[in-house]
Image 1 (cartoon, rainbow, N blue to C red):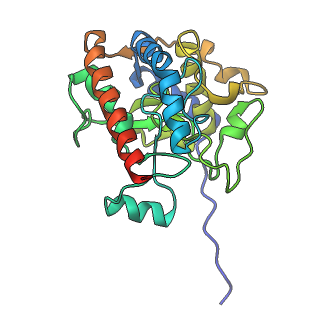
Image 2 (image 1 turned 135 degrees about the vertical axis):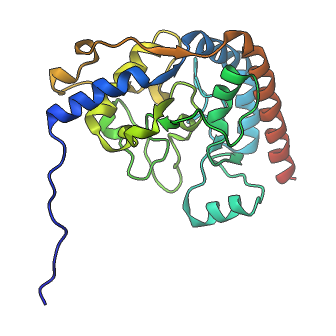
Image 3 (image 1 turned 120 degrees about the vertical axis):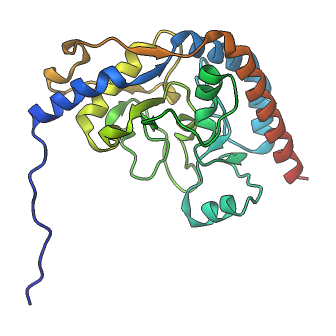
Length: 265
């Protein structure tokens, strides 16, 4: 019997994708820039102290901490590979030259939960919505080398997880409707559109990207420029809750750093 292949089904046309984008944009929820500004200011306040703690632990600060960094929980990233996933599932303490804590999508929600509900996150999401990371925070098959431009760090076994800080960056997560099935994952052009929104929304209040990288908006069809869409961003979050968030996150960071220091003794 001849070897059969999957059928080549027709994918959505450019016109369909544009209509999908027009339907999606009004429902994207973004963290208010004033909240981002306060997180950036607190990162700058603690920059020298955290950098020293990272260096003493042998953890590279470059993926997490830079001037005006919007990373809410530096030093925390997703587990990668079988061994790390197993260690995380078994609640084993974890520290390496790339992190002092592994996490399974709790810490990216921390700022959102505080700024919308004034409380730590739980297993309850906004009804009909899911948290989406805009830029890849993993190095494996990263799209950052296409979606960004500049002098990229070398990615190898001795220098991996170079984009780990994007995991808890408060400007790298948005809420999107679950009914639209992860358009940020599967449509490069919709991703390009959202990248423009992130840049336009936050470029003046923080340094969005590490390593002085920039978004790559070159060589893209003009109809996918955000200026061609009737779009007004949905900024959410209650700024009066920011002190509670910062107190909570700093207590978490201090506790995790102290725990990591005990693992080296």
